[in-house]
Amino acid sequence: NKSMFKPTLSFAYFSKTLSGSYMKSTITQLERRFDIPSYLIGVIDGSFEIGNLLVIAFVSYFGAKLHRPKIIAVGCLLMSLGTFIIALPHFISGRYEVETSVRSSNSTNNLTICLASSPSVQNESKLSMWIYVLLGNILRGVGETPIQPLGISYIDDHALEDNAAFYIGCVQTISVIGPVFGYLLGSLCAKIYVDIGFVNMESIRISPGDARWVGAWWLGYLIAGLITLVSAVPFWFLPKSLPVPEGQLAKCSPERTSFIKESPVMDHKYHADEQASFLRLAKDFMPTLRSLLGNPVYILYLCVTVIQFNSLIGMVTYKPKYIEQHYGQSASKANFLMGVINIPAVALGMFSGGVLMKKLKLSIMGAAKFALGTSLLGYFLSMFFFALGCENAKVAGITVPYGSLSLKNSTLFDECNKHCMCSETEWDPVCGEDGLTYVSPCLAGCRMSDGPGMKTVFQQCSCVAVGNLTASVGQCIHRESCQQVFPYFLALSVITSFIISLGGTPGYMLLIRCIRPQLKSLALGFHTLTTRTLAGIPAPIYFGAIIDTACLKWSHKKCGGKGACRIYNTTAYR
Image (cartoon, rainbow, N blue to C red):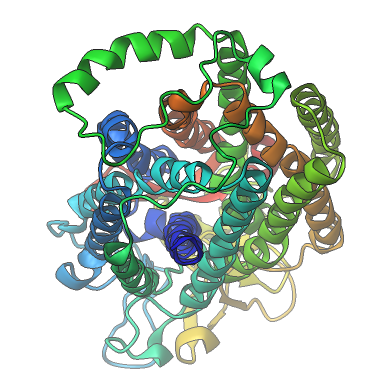
């Protein structure tokens, strides 16, 4: 019965979007955990879409003729399996080793600091551990495929036309509530240290705001996997098709008939009892596709959404990272803000778009104009992000010279730390009393240290030119201008997200209404396929590669080669 299908589909949407956004929320932590640059994270992120591509044409075309609910159930099972595989590296690889320049010496509490530390070279097993994340994500992509095209066409086949837009709006809205919980889960897990329960938390010298902090990223994947597993169950108990409501077959609005050339009035509504022979379906496939691609409105809509999705996917993927790097927030806070502020704005926009369309009784042309207007306004407002910058963190030898001497060329070495024989590849920042961040206690010229874990104080630091020559653990956090600008950044984010997403539902209905009814499943499937190939896969990769160019200091792996980025040139990043 129909009342069962909507909540079931909505829950599947909820679980798929929850695990998808949780994946996005762990991006900066995966970078650090596996020590990889952003473009590689882009590849991992895009692998989900690759899994999609492998099967989407078959699922959309053949799935529409087979038992749709059961196919969706299998998809959910595969998704949960993929999600569990992503968490696997945590359980089969060793502990996360925080990059630190300080080697504890057993004799006294004084750590040997101002000495060259020789990093021990070990065989790094974690090098290839990200492969599991890649494979798990591909599997998630394969499993996610049937949910959208089959679920929405199932609803649309069994709903009166006026209500279809409303139902689809509801399902789409649910699929935006998922990400809220995904990012909140991300925020919770990012607060918990990655190896919780295996290490003594007292001895840890980094806080959640540190560039080397990794949260319990694996925990969220286990939770998301379980939720997805549960969502598969109800689909097994749904019928192959539902009774078509009265008046559905006869009615086809005159506007729609004139709009769709040679529209046979619903003659091809595939009935479940019609035994679809694979051969005949396969033979129809190419001509069907050709008639779809001959529709100019459809082709235009395809081009528009590909360009829009490139900007949106690139933005969403690296927005938490931007909030962390540019405004100095912790991963946990960045995820919290994405979930509580940004995504509800999108949900509200999509929902309002659907409601407005019904209230204003927009025609197809009206919907097109509406979508155009919202996009233009949204992109115009986005220009103001350029104004909301703030200065870089002051890091001696990277963004500012040491002390008061204005060296034109910033280098890590200076008169004050020449005697130290420091490694320049290490990143273990300390905050000097002078308000400058130093790349390591060694490069700050410190000779002694005192206190455990986060409370460590370094003394006799020859580069710190003021006070008692002390430095504390971690980067300095005093960047007033950033704290002042940040609320405006959030406000602008909310407004632009809302305005751009207003056009979402009208645009989607435009897509559905400009297509012959029997091409609907294929049209939605092909649209998803195209946007994923041309936006979903490349956008995170090339955005990541561009962001990598703004990096000022890379971490270095023990066996050579660069790892994750520790600090960016914020102006270039913006």
